[in-house]
Image 1 (cartoon, one colour):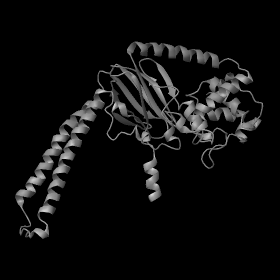
Image 2 (image 1 turned 180 degrees about the vertical axis):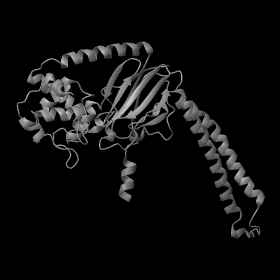
Image 3 (image 1 turned 90 degrees about the vertical axis):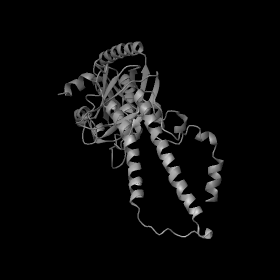
Image 4 (image 1 turned 180 degrees about the horizontal axis):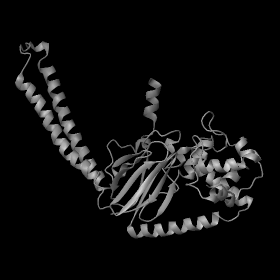
Amino acid sequence: MTQSLILLLAYPLSAFADWELNMREGVTPISQKVYDMHMVSLWVVTIIGILVFGIMFWSIFHHRKSRGVKPAKFSHSTTVEIIWTAIPLLIIIGLAIPATKLLIEMDDTSDTALTVKAVGYQWKWKYEYLEDDLTIYSNLDEKSVELSQRVDTVNPMEHSDYLLDVDEPLVLPTNTKIRILTTANDVIHAWWVPDLGWKRDAIPGFINDNWTMINEPGTYRGQCAEICGKGHGYMPIVVKAVSMDEYKIWVAEKKQEQVAAAEASSKEMSMEELMTKGEAVYKANCLACHQANGEGVQGVFPAVAGSQLATKPENLQAHITQIIYGKNLMPAFGEQLNDGDIASVVTYTRNAFGNDTGDVVQAADVAAERK
C-alpha cells in the first residue's frame, strides 16, 4: 500500500495535463446547448447537495446528546411530506422542459444541405456523400496499425493520436447543416464524436439520423462506442471541417483520384507491383484479424501463413471468391475493394509469410470471379 502511494506521488504531474473533469463544450450549436443543459443540471444538483448535507450535518451537530437536546415526539407531518414531494417534482419539471426542447431540436433534420451515410464495418467506416455521389472508406491509420502489434521494439505512446487517426477522414464543410445517417453492415457499432455533441448507434438493417453544423474549422476525433468485437478499439472516427470552397475542391480531387485508381487497378501488374500494393491492402484491411505475421488469432481468426487456402494451387479460385464474398466472420470485401486491390492482396498472401507459391493474380482474374 505504502509503495503504491509513493509510486503515485512520484508520477509526473505532466502526465495528467490533458485530463478533463467536465464534458466538452464542442463546436456545434447542439453541443453548446447540451453543455449548457449539463451545467444547469450540475449546478442544480450541487445546490441541492449542499442544502441537504448542510442541514443534515447541522442537525447532527446541533442536536447532539451532549447538549441535552430532547427528541421530538412527532413521527408524521403531512405538510412536510407535501413540501418534500412538491419541490423535487417542480425541479424535475423545470429541467425536463428545456431538455425535451433540446431533444426535439436534435432530431430536426429538416433543411439540411448535405447528407452523409456512415456505415460501420468490422472494423472501419464507410462514408457515402449522397448528393456528391462519392464513397470513401476510413481505416485505422498505418502508424497505429503498426504500433498495435505490440512488438518489443515499438511504443504506442510514440504516436500522439494512437488509435485516434485514420487514413481517410470524413471531410465536411463548416457552417452548413449536414444530416448524418448511421447504420452498420455486420454488427452493432456507434458513431460518436464528442465535439459534435451526440452519439448514434449504427445498427444493421436500421438507419438512425441526426444532424450537425460545425462552426469552427479543424480536426475532431471520436471512436466507435459499442463493444462490436475484437477490433472495436481500432475503428476511430476523424472529422475534418473545412470551408465550403475547400470541401468542393476536395470532392473534385477525390473523384479524380478514385477514377485514376480504378483505371490503374484494371491494368496488368508485375509480381513486384502486386506484392507492394498487396502489402498495403493487407495492412489496411486484413492485419487486425490475421496479424502482421499472418498467423491469425488462435481459436478466433485463422492463419494465412501456411494455410491450405493460401498455398494449395487448387484453392486459388476459392481464395479469390472468399475475399470477394466473405465467409463466416470474414466480411465481404468485394464492395470495399476494386479488382486490382483484391488481385494484389491475394498475390501478396500467397507469396508472403513463407507461403512462396509463386502464384500471380491479376485484376482480370478477380473480375471473372465476380457474379
